[in-house]
Length: 296
View 1 (cartoon, rainbow, N blue to C red):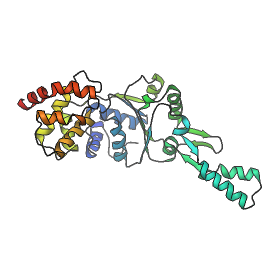
View 2 (view 1 turned 30 degrees about the vertical axis):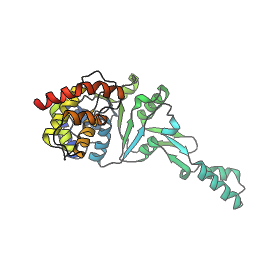
View 3 (view 1 turned 135 degrees about the vertical axis):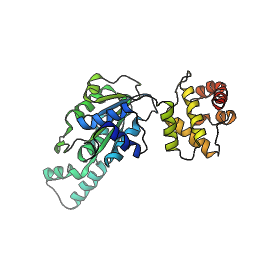
View 4 (view 1 turned 120 degrees about the vertical axis):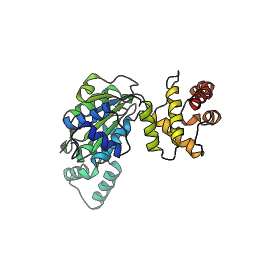
């Protein structure tokens, strides 16, 4: 499953960087081993640290389509696997009756033909070779759906009563993410290669900002990154992630600034903090943080 020429985590890190993803050694090693050992990659960490982006960038590196399954509370197997296209089946039924079709067995067989099956993300990934399957925020789904996922990821096979068994010709590359809003069961983690994604250190986050927001000055990238990393240590409901660092920098660049100033930082907090309580708490501190950052 490894791309041609990728013989080590360091080489894979270079390929990821070529697609604008700066992975540290731990993450590059996890991606390398998941591909080498043909195991799903389970990425857990705070929101906004770049877990979802790993699926996108691996799809780019492997030149394979990304198929995303966004998990949410109440999702069930039919929403993830397949569904029948009832409107098209009904049209076919009416057309067959108008054409004089009277054989019920033949009509039933036609109604459950493959052409009327709507492939949801899991089935689409099994039928697409190669492909990258991103199962995003699995911690938002319930225990039953998690057990269902474990079954699918064990043998990459699903059974459709009307059509038979569908088996992946080549199993897709699978990336599972979790924000750890609840504990995911050990059985699913054991099936995967697990990696905890940390917030990047200062130098790496500055490099990410400079890569993703090329219009930002080096000084602005350093000031915004420093301020965001200070905010992460504050007692906030939702500490900002790398995504918020990028959003804040883009907002400041859009306003034509090249350096962070206390008044402007306070006015643009909506780009980095998404809760009113966090903004009110941070607004009392951010002026001092920015002044210290600028002075530093």
